[in-house]
Length: 321
Image 1 (cartoon, rainbow, N blue to C red):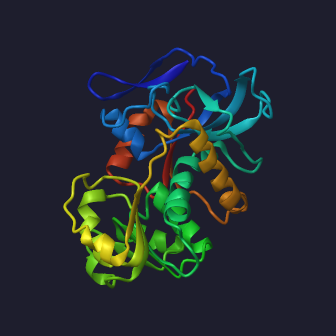
Image 2: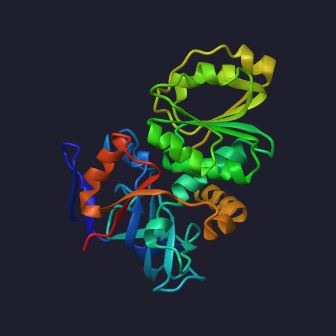
């Protein structure tokens, strides 16, 4: 098969690669589409290695057609369309998919749509509901509202009954797009001082991608018993903060990550997501904005697009013959 490899200079190269070897509990799929995530950029830079036992190829979410299955797998058949979360290997013509993570693709859903759901959807759901304990009436700040996770989180928070959804984005056009998705207030972080414009002590839940850079303003914005859920560290991992605030105001700070979790926990995350959101996704109450569809052999361009923060929603790779 052909797959994207990282060469000695960090460039993404489309070249021959061994087919994946079947593992118990897995499906082998012909990859029709693969979602592009910031984690892929970090891995390409040598900053986010795959967990032990996973493919060292890029790609954490895929959609395609089953071409083979392990002997111990039941409930799926060769020829079915499926999508799901993988530990690596998505930037390739073929990929192993854990049957516990496989989801049948609805007839009216394209491979491209399906390939953009799980990494962003699982992360947004875990941040808002499981870690963030979002309840109806909460006031929510979602950073990076134009990202894949951000666009999902805005829609989920709306359906969950948040009374106020605030977000940030990097251009006037993206601000307007976030408002159309359901945000009540959106700030252009390049021109607006959101940390001043939002009332101190008024936010119940913050979903944060920046880490250290925004830690101090986030603490000032949180209400008593507020929750800060960190899903990324784009603004650094080392910060100095007055921990007395956590005690006095009963603030809860939680970090989440999925790739390194054991199989059982990933299956639980998938089930929580399906129980809460699957009907809304099938009915398009929640949709994944796709910014660009790029042939897989041009993955370098997809990564450039994410690095430049040109996208709104998702960039997806489509199969290259």
